[in-house]
Length: 286
Ligand code: UTP
Image (cartoon, rainbow, N blue to C red):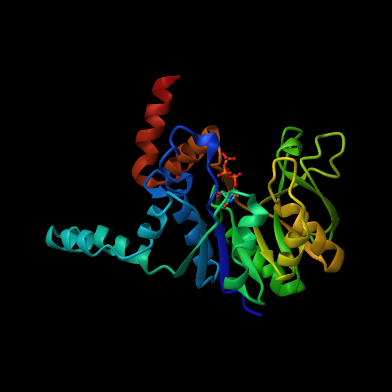
């Protein structure tokens, strides 16, 4: 079955970004000239996704405005002859079909994904966490969709990590299938270096069969009262095969301030209009 739908959970408080996120969504913070969430939406669309449910919450309606049309701005740009900006503004509102679902309380990522159950129905779908930017020739979500098409099973993105990473990410027990594809035998959230099965971490992109919703419903809240996604994945693992795809490309974790700064500099260095000037500026600092 073709993967047409995606869920983008964006209802969290973004506490690691305070005070910036006191009254604006983390997902709307701009890396160079595009809000974080636009990177995920574009990746989804470039991967063949047609309908996107953004999981949102109070105080985050700027995301809805962002993907809506902007008649006044468009008229203004037209009158001033700023046609390149006009084209870009119109392109953004036409990227996909958008649906917004409120998560009334930030009860965790698993809970946020569950909010999209009715929107998804009985078909496989993608989940993209908007605080990660993946920059690659084949979009990250497309790499997972290709694995889904081949194995007819859920696929999650993996990245190699270090000792620190074993304390931050879910770590998988892999059985290698091809150079980049692994069947996942187990998944443990933040095990630490001693208990980690491998150096392969589960990152922020997924393709799920609808069974994930059953898994999330069976998951009990953790000590912070949050329903986590990896527990739902573990449930699916017991019923069906789940594959991990080692991501090919550059990933920027924009969920915290340091990662966000690294993303801004790295992506600006890749843009011809900033590259030379930024290099000269960075050299002048050392
Ligand atoms: P994070 O844990 O990285 O985001 O969740 P956060 O909770 O907003 O940030 P911190 O940890 O407080 O700094 C990954 C994604 O899942 C969404 C977040 O909005 C983010 O895009 N999320 C998280 C939800 O939609 N609902 C939740 O209950 C939790």
